[in-house]
Length: 167
Length: 400
Image 1 (cartoon, each protein chain N blue to C red):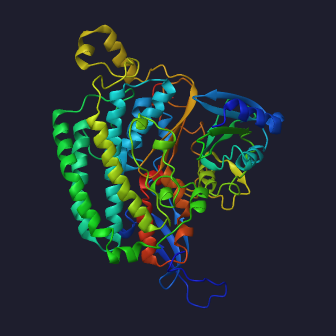
Image 2: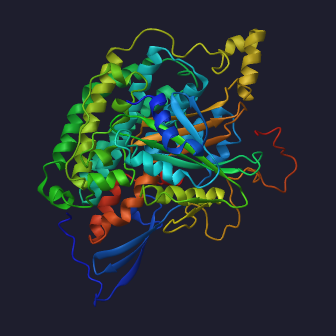
């Protein structure tokens, strides 16, 4: 299995200016990309790299940090090589006003429904997705429920304040 | 290739009908809607609609204390709830850096493999039902009941088990559990082989299953298949071997693989997995170490009730745990277990608060069900039903 330093060195050589920061948390290398549409290129490179071959998309999910102004929304990708067992996590952030990121369905067909799900819940528009529609919620829903501003409880109730009940 | 596939040309001159299969069709065993374009019995295209039992678990989880989320995971793949429960608990333990005793690992293996047997019994016997063989189904399901009796002894519930706690188990296996378990070990293999002999080399069953709903290994990997459905295509990827957890590395077992990735291979792979799970469960039980059934983590594991009533410190811990005021470190973790249907992953992002900042479930069903339209294209309707039941698509896991 390749170690984190080698992977990082290789990625730095290829995409040094696109990597904002990195850390190793619970044995996984986590890379935050600079804002912009770089995730597709990095994933494409990782997938075709002759040594790493991170060609299995384990999962992807949306993230929302209302306090990060200019980079409120994000997508986390986790890719893996099933033979060596090495996996890597990649995150890309973008402003909530323009929630657009390039779709990776052309690299990983399995991303199709995963991206639809994150569009459904976070309103992230995956550019180049073949069929970007809501998937679990009803089609005429007019908000994106996993964003932090949408409360779990009925918004008309004032007896259940978030500070007493959960977050 | 699918033996029943036909060439579909663009200048088709027959009459094409639109057929709404589901949402509640008895043959689909769950809430699945597929809008099919059919030419007689042949399926030209299908358009799945999902989300009928979506319950927003990821959103609910952001508002609940960590120990309260186990009950949500029950309702993902409800055919093997203990695997979901224990997988989630292990993800939290990885985040909180809790090391559990060996005995807990072995007890977890026993319960998870038992759940896998129950899960695969359901899937394999239902494949039989969909080919018209009801006998095996009615016969083998009493063993699922016996497994549920054992769940009841360990967790107090049968279907939605909420099994285990952060740090281990609530209590040791009860005396009745040992009796039931020994009976199961004694009697199950004979009953299972009898069930197997009803179907595995049955000419009618083989004719119906071989070549129905095939998928190649390349396609399966591209669509993110994991678990028995991936192994049926010939890829020997099993998380229990690839990234061993809960001391699976202590045991010797075989990962069965198929060749064609069709319904028959999915059936036989699951049948062999039942045998392997049985062996694992038996080995773990025979080698069950002595010791405590939970880690020594007073911040997460509830103190004994008699101490709560009589001692100050235990009362404080009880109160803090129930209110969710546990010292959860900041950070993020992805942890996956081999669920009944494949890689069941939990991605937890913690900001140190009482509930996860973000919790994402990697649900194997959701990811591989998107290949379904392609798998049934060109096949007959009855094969499509068979393909769906052999993929073991569970609505709870699909919709979360």
